[in-house]
Length: 246
Image (cartoon, rainbow, N blue to C red; front, side):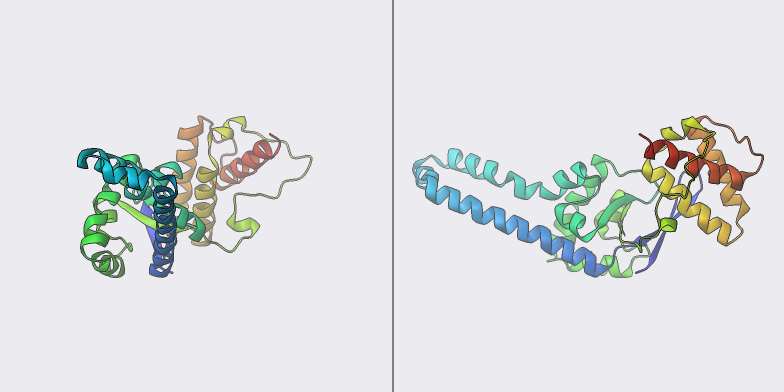
């Protein structure tokens, strides 16, 4: 798996693991099986309900309208689930991969729509060849739809340990300092912890400073320790204290 580096608009570098071509193909195959199952159910419904025979006696426009309604879920499958699950279809959810913006923001409906529209080129018109080649040769493992939408697909699979989650070791008698840390989301805290650990490992004080500034801007709290690293450590522990006690 290759590493995908994303520079946010705050100029903070976030590192993710890009989804492999195998993961993407398996996710697509899973979604395809779901659509085939739906198609079979529709055909069975038409046969056993008698609607299929009734459609044969209808005028072409009425029959076409019913057919379109029945197959709308097939046409808009990916854009519906990606919008609902914030970047995941059922197949992507099963394979633990997700669509994200390369500028660090959550992808929007417009981004999912562009990706969906480019499926015509990436998958349908080229039988998947254009998308496959694009993913293999692009720096961020993007198909053409991803490039147009400014998105990429990352893997959510990680070796689980307390250091790779948002959890922190805190004592039962721990006294928090910053109540406003609850303004952060789990994803914010995961990004903060991941980049903080990486910055400490490489002794990158600039990243630590930027993380501190971003936390202050989002939460409205101010560093009371005078040390940026200590401040971030306290924020992580305070977040765990408040969220675990809710």
